[in-house]
Image (cartoon, rainbow, N blue to C red; front, side, top):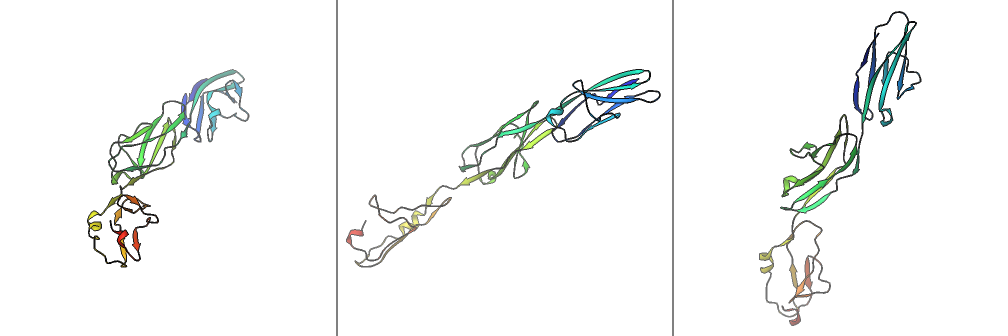
Length: 231
């Protein structure tokens, strides 16, 4: 008598292990033969069938045939292999404070896919879709974002995507104003820009709206100022 196979159905992820057990009540010597898809599995002749490191091709219907001198009985069990892969990784983003940004992942797998986003390893409440949107970013949102994609017992984590917060360029107008002066011809003209923002910063000096050739540093110097330099 065969009482069945335990478990009757199993769902595992790629790389995991699974065990099926034939629950048989037989008299005398009994032999066992496991099959998958009707094909005998070589060496699978014990009451217990162990499958280590399950792969996608292991999915299917398993059958065990128990035989003795009185005849044979059989029982079946189904193995579902959950597999999930990421086909498109989330990408790093640079954004100015207050802007909206989003991260997106594309994944393939068997069964329903579930998502969970994290920032710097901390689970983000509400981050359970393939797209994660931040409505208005600030300093606290900067960090490394990743997502775990799960299908049944199988899961995979994406690469990290970095959100870098950009600070707009600003010039200290008061400091520039304070450098206004009257020079005597032949004196040194020296102007210094006080600017802040996400670097690297590039500079271009102008006089009366026209770009000055070579005026591309933070400091502008003219060794001997003349009337032509007034403006």
